[in-house]
Length: 431
Ligand SMILES: [Zn+2]
Image 1 (tube, rainbow, N blue to C red):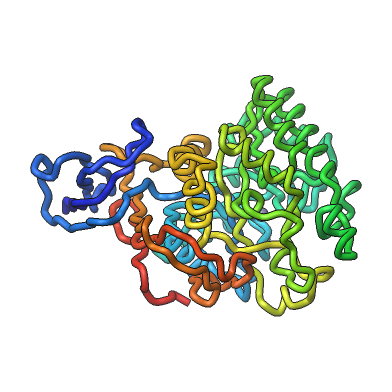
Image 2 (cartoon, rainbow, N blue to C red):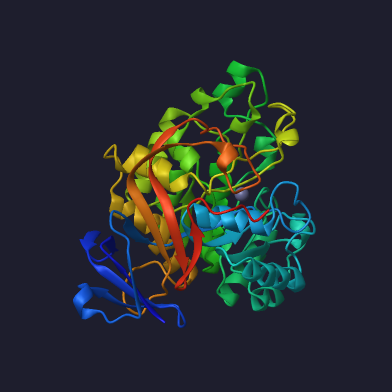
């Protein structure tokens, strides 16, 4: 059946702005058929979306869905529904599950079960080293064939540079990206917070050089091997500078930045609330500004939420003992639209590019644009709607966010993947 959405403002990637237009898609092929004046677009069913903006579905290449094995934190159902509720049509999930995503069967199982959930599409990321232990390389060939989008030991860095060099050489031959959690543990030593926050609040510090040093090592290894190196959650000024240097040198490096590193600093941290504990830690104001500048000019390519749900009991252990991480899927767009676009710090064009177009392009995914022939992955947003972030209203099982109570603009009303509605505001929780 051919469906037409009328009366909305449609994102035109070439123009970098909204146009008044209708969008027609085929819900069987899952493709956009036409964008234009409604009188010229034949359809079996027409629906008014007046007052809403139609953006290409968001894509997050870095989330934690905790399934298999850690389903007290999140399940595929709750995580993929949370993604759809945040406007995401595709997410890539990190392999630090139980068991880790280290065998082809686990990759296949997550893809199959994800499809059954019928919400956002899930692309598993497989382990870079066996069980993320940093000792021997995973079987990239088999995992890639099973559908792994990329490879990562996210949560930990690969400490052995020689092993990392071998990994990148193999991945270059396979044509798949290495997605690195950059943390030299001989420097970080498990430190919980930024140096200044640690000194002020009396806990352990994670020096910024722990991140920048490993990025520097790995971009040089990427240069030697020709691999696609993707740097996860860049948080420091020096790290952004290394990525900038690598790109200027023509090295095949891409990078992501999280909403929390663009909006928060170590000064904001509440010592009594472990929801502020995240890895890499919230950094200094000068780091935040440098990351924001690098994001605005495209040096940091994409927004990734690093959505990391934890059970309330785990976060209740306090700043020193609690696990790292915050949830982010359901708040990312509204936070960035409100604090960056509406404040004039980043253009809407850049935000949409970083949340939709560029992740698709860099990782070879469908979607990313509202144009004929593209997959009908759409998010319908009411940009004029003001709402308050309330963790109890999340579809995610995770409530661990430092943004509770923030007033934001821009509410996701409906999300469509391949021509099928996968989220509608107010729908019931799956689990
Ligand atoms: Zn992560």
